[in-house]
Image (cartoon, one colour):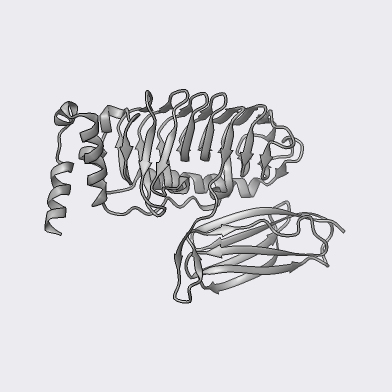
Amino acid sequence: MKLKKTIQFKIAGISKQVLGVWTRGALVASLLLSVTYAQALAPVNLGSTADFAILAGAEISNVPTSAVTGDVGLSPAAGSYISGFGLTEVSGTIYTADATGPAGSVTSAAMLTAAKGDLTIAYNDAKGREPIPEGAFLDTMAGEIGGLTLGPGLYKFTGTLSITGSYLTLEGSSTDVWIFQIAENLVVADAIHVILAGGALPANIFWQVGTSATLGSTSVFKGTILADQSISLSTGATLDGRALARIAAVTIETSTITAPGFVYVAVDDDNEIVPGAYTLSQNFPNPFNPSTMISYKLPSSSHVTLTIMDVLGQELAVLVNDTQSAGSHQIEWDAGNFASGIYFYRLQAGSFASVKQMILIK
């Protein structure tokens, strides 16, 4: 153990001047070695934003044809500022703050306000994570990380972060976490790929961007982008993650965005698989008459509330209000006494919250 601490200390203490004369291979080795002994990071809690592939404040625009897997939401701007989406381009729900959204969208101002609040919390969490990066974790290669292989850890860039010239590889296990704190812009060049190795997952990669993020044409990017201002995907760009912009716009052009799926990482004493994160599934069947099943998963014992709401956000029923153990749970809602229409169900478990839509047709 003493030897490990000595190795970590020596690498973390390397100055920028010394790094400047290292070969790229030596730098890669130092980064991978140093993070081997770094303190493990917990994922950023995205709260109710976890279901969104796109969430923005001012505008969401699309040049067809794109493929978005996950929900799309815009607030506080009016729904009319969502443009360019065909009826089959979003595998999820388009949520708007008013009734001016595109065909098929759902008005849910209260839910979107909560989601934008959770986005701010997640953004500030990623921005404020400690320990404060130093040595090889601070301004790596002066903010140009194309061609490198980076192990898990907390990386800080005091200006713009660029990924150009060559692919970036993130290497680690399915439980490892990467958090990139970027003071200014994130710029990914055309045709650049972020490659995951060793079992690393997009769900555990977070890019906190102080200004705006731009993904170049045909680039392939991994992880959740939490931008203060805007996010832009150029023609043919692919994002395995989420585009979450606090204030300004998200723009895409024949792009593919896939919100990370659910991850299992543990087995309990009864050899049952335990979820690695909270998740709320789409009810089944949907549309339904008169009953439907709602399923969700908990990574640990949590106090759970599951409520039914109308389109105005008014609570109509409480299905669960109790402490439940880790694992998979399912509950039936019998809507025999309710009128046909659109309803929402909301899961609150610890600090996690998620809302989904369902349709009752009689």
